[in-house]
Image (tube, rainbow, N blue to C red; front, side, top):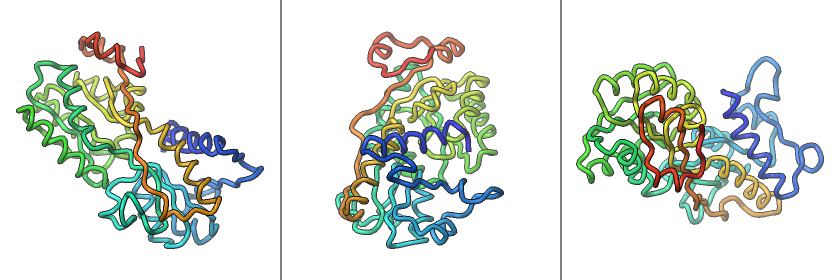
Length: 289
């Protein structure tokens, strides 16, 4: 796992706990899976059996599914849930009902905004490429929404799926070969982990690319608009605090971020000969130069 992902998830989670007065080694003991053994990382099921923790904090949906299979009683907090009702993790967003709760970082209407952003960056765009990751539960809902958003603007869609990290170079090459005008990269764990590679290949292929997570733009992507994952992981501390104070996870509603984050990488824009509109820059939350 890239170091920036560890810092993003674990670092912000610890910051979130500190906002509620928790300090590692003083009044809380945080044990990561990587800390249990020197020579290997145990499965989530093995970790649960070994530690019998008071709470399990997981970074994303796939890990939440594994944790839920391991226990139906220990509270599970996930700051990046997706499709949780369909996967059987919760009964409903308003009242989860079981032992899983947390944050859903995917907001309805976001794909439309991302496609509008793509048109703002590349006004003459007619063909939109989608770098998908359909193995992730967050993938299919996003693809459906992005297709609909493109259809509403009479834009044609070209899709290339990356089920593994090894698929990413060929998928991006396929989009470039199809001569898409701009590409949108889905918000999934795999694609986030590979943000440096995606940014480098997109630049090599001279492919203007829109993302949902700012971390892509930090690592060379052109522009992003979406949820600030730093907030999501910090907010997980709120759920941990509530549970440690006696709340049942099934009674804690799933939360949705209210603030979306717009980031632009001007160095990448210059390399791609993309003129970032002044109006876009004026409303940008983060400019990387």
